[in-house]
Length: 294
Length: 239
Image 1 (cartoon, helix red, strand yellow):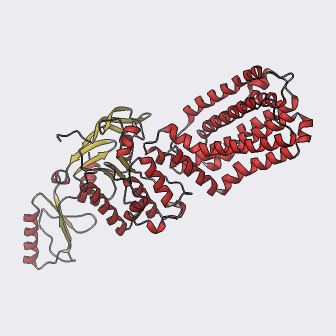
Image 2 (image 1 turned 45 degrees about the horizontal axis):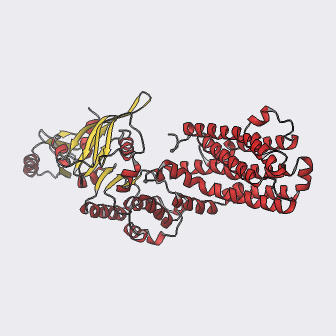
Image 3 (image 1 turned 60 degrees about the vertical axis):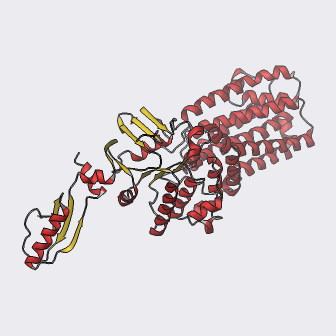
């Protein structure tokens, strides 16, 4: 990372009384990067993000966004779009009025119509926020965040409650912003979205950053898996296949191709059908599960 | 700030409950005081009617509306949303309460103008203007402080009452007993010296420069309420 990072978090700690919500957290996000901050429930992701966004004050440590304190709103916020985890729009304003208000306050240039088109809310422009569905509120939230194409975009659970079409549209819009150079910080419980899109991932657990790297870096440390079941009466496969407590078998291996070939050869030789066969590299959710043991 | 104020004004007029409880009810009460001004003037003085108009709007139009507005905007996370923009905290708060204050000032101005038209104007209009500003500032500051203790707009219906009813009661106390022998207590309780200032401004009989000293307790309450608000006010709902 040669250029100045867009976000620089150094030994961030946030304590509530004796409870450490975030402890000694350090990470950097480079310009144009999509950085995913993932973790279990209560890991401290949203709290950490709120400090980085400037909504909360750290107990100790430093946070820099574009080289400035994120609490220096005048200097930082016009470059930042924030999609909060919870909506926060006035129920008595219409969709158009809400976006226009946030747009005007963002000090960025854009057209309300363009942003509503982007999230497919043009037909609902005159509808009050109180009458929107949960998914429509998320889209409104996204619209307000991307108004004026910010340089840095925070997405906190952006696709929660969205149907598949809306999710695809949202990620298309994020991809277009990234192509134009926007840096994105993402937290999500949909790990496959992070796996597909993140340049780097930080895995938080109990307030601390336990692992960090590209998806390939993180998954490389754990074995790939092959899962299958057998019909009753079929011969028992040899190790490394082991029976799973819930039924079926699993093979954990760092040599996926070789073990898969050996398994298929064994099944062919014994005339056995491998039911529900799944084989693939380690997923982020496996990595996240492994944190519980740390 | 103005863009926030504009959106707040739209919200106020779309929320019928707030419109009725915070704006139409005080106006109805003020119309009653002005229409029966001879009776009230007989009980106290013409200045007493003016003080009742000012404190009714201040208690309900400013104080209760401020508590309700801030609690409501916090509960819906609208405050947090506004703070995710470059707008400063002071700009956000000012924008939110500006419509409430502006509407209250218009209400007071119209009602006192009507009262002046039917019963004769104040002896010291400029002093009356100072009193109006002081009362509105005090009620606003109390509103911000009480909003810190208020969890929801429904809760605001309860938490706003002590200051609203208390100040109106003090206005009646001072207005009905007169200012000839005002006690230190009357001057020190919230609204006491401000009521006396309104009476002096409307009825006359006291030099304006002497009456201005009555501003001190009111400004003291403003400072106390601002200090309290800065300690108690929360931008986000308690978790």
